[in-house]
Length: 162
Image (cartoon, rainbow, N blue to C red; front, side, top):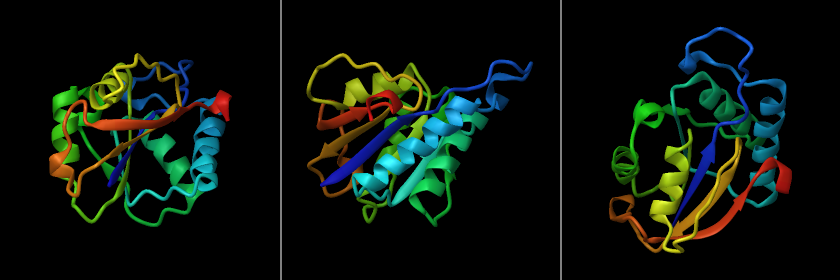
């Protein structure tokens, strides 16, 4: 059994005239990212590996979650999580080592919603506002076996729903 946690980056700050990839989180975003990390602790969920988009807002979201949960491994940055497509993201997930049972990936909409709906066998429309976090479970032993429509959506939470 494998669990994939899909998290959209927290609320970013649009007040600065920066390139999109460099946009930081705003105050609300920082608070929400930490809150989602605390929720993982409450749910007794400890990712074995965390992967993030290289965008500043996604990396900062990951760092705040990492701080909240006490994760001590390296944050892995995945270029395809910034401008990738469902297929390229799925290809990256398929390369994750078998020993990692719970994986947290952090990135952007609309691709994260597409990924969540594509992996879930529920055929349910979902929206992922900023800092939303979803959990999918897969009845597989190795990440290379992950396929579209093969996951069970366990839950989808947002900072406002917890």
